[in-house]
Figure (cartoon, rainbow, N blue to C red):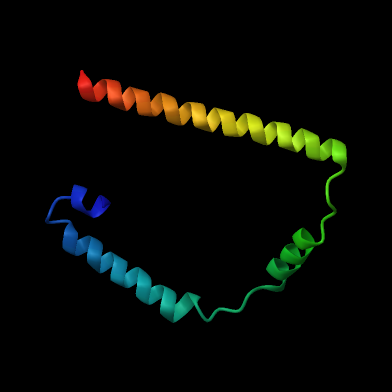
Length: 87
């Protein structure tokens, strides 16, 4: 939807740039081999140990705090939008 916020003269340039990026991906990036370091890092992350009970409780508390903060930020921004809409 950001495409509609632009000037109509910029639309052909954006579409051309998008086409160039897609062509670059299909020609140069898609067939590139995955480096061994990336595979090793992925295997290492899969082999990490499960957290202890204390660590899990701490992580759960931290997650719940982040979740509450995100919900609060959403509600505040929604209220600000509604208030500014009616004023």
